[in-house]
Image (cartoon, rainbow, N blue to C red):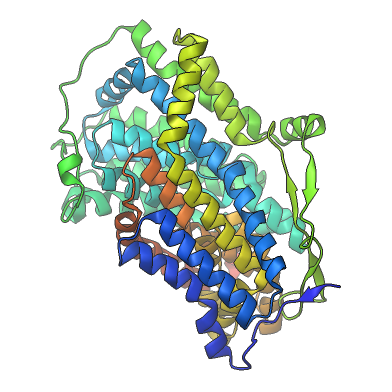
Length: 553
């Protein structure tokens, strides 16, 4: 017999919402204010979530435990598997010296730290977001930035801020495709609507990124390069999303933006080269930054060898992201394991869904088609190209596993927490609090998407969680369902920088272990401020610019 979720267990929405927020508050407070190690903070949050789910929401204890276990498995694959293997590749390139050559080649394009951020954190990161998503762009870009000498907080925090505007079309459009498939939106219409929201922020985020790093004056000194970066990303993002579809939006926009920026730098350079690797103002990690080295010239052969592992990575990640390749690999090996005692035993009820709907809980061991496997194979191929012997490859892999052990544990615990809140209904209680805002709903509905990503770590999961609620609320209020479905995804991208697993990925990639609280405190303002700006823009679309809701394709 199915257990039905209750969204106001205490008969008072204010008190129920406050209690539903307890697990998230416990984890974030432990991380951000009490400086507790991330895996312990995640464990405390999980314990709080179990207490609230069982004793406040009435979820059977064994069912709550199984939901947490289900989430833990999801934390290992795909998220943890990506983190482990991208750090493995980075270790290989560091050990043989090719990463140092890569750094020199990037410095050869520009020694200005601000433009390096545009090129790597924004453009290069957007490519990996479009091809793979799920933590890959932050892991790659943070690792490269720390290698270039950026301070750990700058490398971590700025990689997270940059990984926003591309997220809604990440992993070959997975978030929006899932939104349409699960909740019955027209795929092209909701894709086009997102493509009328995010290009505005693809223009804003590069400016915001450099302002966060170098301050207003430092930003204005390179405004032409920032404008070229943002425009050359935003225009393809709009055109591809409105007239082609969601799958290749980020990849095309990232390649165009990268090419335009590199081309622009051939005819323009800043008058003053910014060499400081630390955040302007208070940077608690400034002492760990490395001053810029003189640019070393390398032979063409050495440069090709240095870039080869990352080209191999890009090729593997792109191939692994193709739906046809994933389907073929899943046909070979992707056993599915229904979680006994949980699968189809939790029932969502109105007003979240039009009619009672059972929640599936099937863990698919899609090890072959997982992005992390593509990264692992790219690392092995790269290692062989770099002339590593098999024993050294295996030794480096296990060395990497030991290096990231606590990060993997943290990701497991955080996904356990996020999954438990989903099955217990506590996250839905938080969402309903946003939904009950009447005429302000376009603003707060956008923040609902932000909350969904902050809780789950995934724009896809947030769309699954709140996409139906957005549709129901919009229809009741006489708003466009496509507008609010798109707003859930567009607002969600700004929550990506504060979700716990992304912060752990960033701290792991920069080897700044046990400093997740510092990263969270740094990015939180940027996350909520940008989310509010998206909410204001969606509100203007709803009430001031209704013509922007007409989709032509």
